[in-house]
Length: 135
Image 1 (cartoon, rainbow, N blue to C red):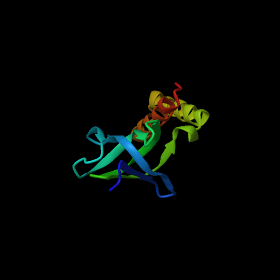
Image 2 (image 1 turned 90 degrees about the vertical axis):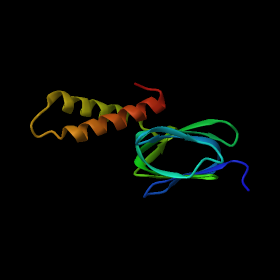
Image 3 (image 1 turned 180 degrees about the vertical axis):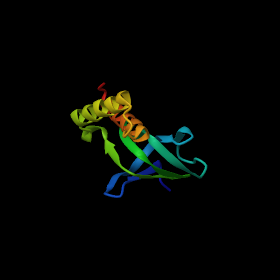
Image 4 (image 1 turned 120 degrees about the horizontal axis):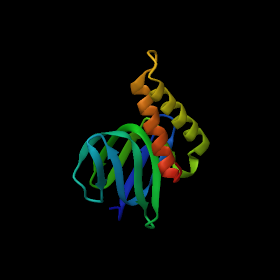
């Protein structure tokens, strides 16, 4: 029996995380949730946000999650994300540009602007920047 909780974060492109961890905190669609070893089994959808976890050595790690699903079992958490990025892989300039574009689209409110899409793009950019510690 594993001493810790096993975390897997997978996207359609690749496996992002596959390691033993102490705790996982994820952006569930109904609110943020945390899971420790021995947690009750459940499934939930995920919203855009930050996935935090402590690795086996107690170091806190951060990932950007762009929606998906989570399966929590007593000894394993599986995150199936639309996309995910580790903190060190986030391109700050790209995120700032995306934030500026989304804010401009929302401010213009042009008839041909998809406001819902612009709001989602803004949320993604803001979360990426907050994970990197930039604004």
